[in-house]
Image 1: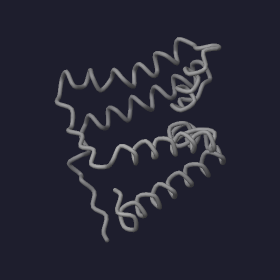
Image 2 (image 1 turned 60 degrees about the horizontal axis):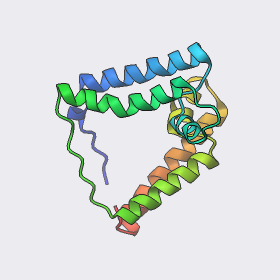
Image 3 (image 1 turned 135 degrees about the vertical axis):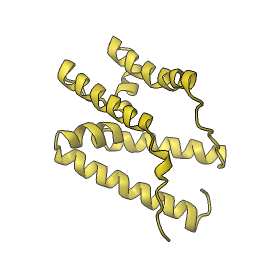
Amino acid sequence: MSVQIDWQAFTPISLVGGLLLGVATVILLLGIGRIAGISGIFSSLLKPKRVEAWQILFILGLVVSPLLYGLISPLPAIEVTTSLPLLIGAGLLVGFGTRLGSGCTSGHGICGNARLSPRSMAATVIFMFFGIVTVYLGRHVLGLI
């Protein structure tokens, strides 16, 4: 088995997207002292005790930005070839994992690692390891993916 990288998938817009994500993360951290962890931001919207405007705007930006991009360039085709029960199960496992790990890949992988947090580094290694194991088992052992 060999890994091949599709270098044509790396476009200038990918670089711009990464830069925007980095800038938004820094603005959020330095501006109001908050971490741009999507699972934490989204879960706070589900608890209506105190929702702040920045949280709504952050999630709205995640939804609206692909729509705006679609106005200037065609969006890539998305093809889902797996079953709905498998997708639901995967989503529930991801949700459980973010609660268990006290954060998600954006909070730990982007923000925590940038702050050199040992906890985030460990969490990112664990996320990656189990992601690799899951894909391997799903493709080669169970034939699900």
